[in-house]
Length: 188
Figure 1 (cartoon, rainbow, N blue to C red):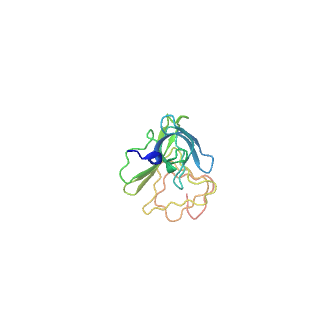
Figure 2: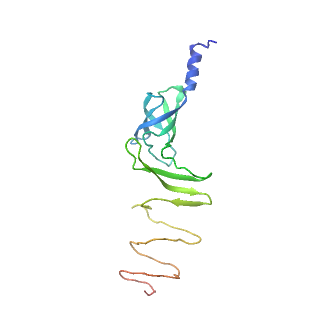
Figure 3: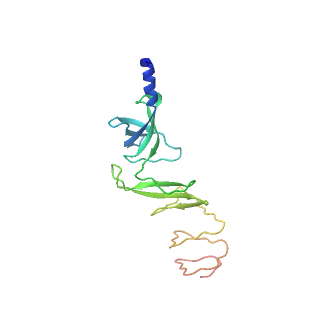
């Protein structure tokens, strides 16, 4: 059956509207993140814009896989709409759980890194925060408030730089050392 050139071109354009892409180079310096990607073997495209989620910014490593949309089936007009890196994907989550993770120490080609969890939401409305060093706030942070209905537990050493104000009563204090002057109505 002969559909003619127009029908054949339409057929191939429809087949080319979605494809897999392997990411190579990235430029994260402009208003949109731009990648060099390889679609079919040897089909390398520059200037592929990646559409990310609002409020979240990430730079995929070289070798990550993505899904590309080609507007009108034209291979020159492309957007990357999803990225996954099976080398570093966090595994073992239960249905409904979510996690934020990063890759630490990867080489320039994307290999040799260590996947590290940052935040993980667990079933039962529990959240875990991970890191060798966890910094909360910066020089612009005015107040950090921790509110808990049952209590706050700190395990390990606690260093306070600045003033300590206790409102309410204390029930047990052990091994308390105060350097400097103590003020208030209590005794040491």
